[in-house]
Image (cartoon, rainbow, N blue to C red; front, side, top):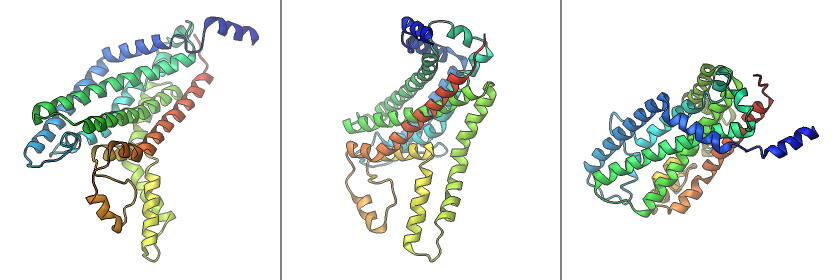
Length: 324
């Protein structure tokens, strides 16, 4: 053990080769046919939803102070709002980038060859994740700029500083949201040897949170906090429990962050009582700093989930036997 420790010390830190792994992964992602298909899909989505929102805004006679932000939230049939489309599309893109990150190396029988170089498992796993994460961030930033370009050309007015700050924070929240689904796919890529199984497991988790979680939350709230006498206190308790349970879903956290950032008039994300409704609706828009404080628990929750899942994947990968 002492000899192995000295050898590791001579060879360098466990993060030796991290930059090389990140650069290779980004190059592989950006030049792959899979990425070409995703890029076409994402660009068509941004153009379609942006153009539809622009047509809706130009057809209205309003003097909205945050007109640029409405490009992200305005929907026109049959297309949804751009922010809603991202909530559906980003998990699929993140899963597509990471579902075969580790098991693909196993199946190609290249993992032992890579680790025979001065690259540790730590650097390989972190490089796989960061390479896919930076690729996703680059793609989302390009879409963000595309929507802003559509707004500049269509509206003919520049965005204010607060609108740019809110849109940047929305971009950051979207990247963090994509990072969660990416680490889910990476974890399944470590646990399952077949790439198809890892992809199906990742999509199953996404479908569970998208289609079934809210139903389970409603049933759990009705069971744990039943309304027996019809009192307002019972209804409030049941609603608060349902809201608490729903926030275990990353979809709910992303939706709440999006609403608070892109709709400055939103002043709370909790239960609004009738006597608070007038102040919540008629109050002045929140400054961007206050909106950031409002969504700070949501961002912290998604980042904590990313770290927890990555640690689980790291431990599983360190225990995995690798043979040449």
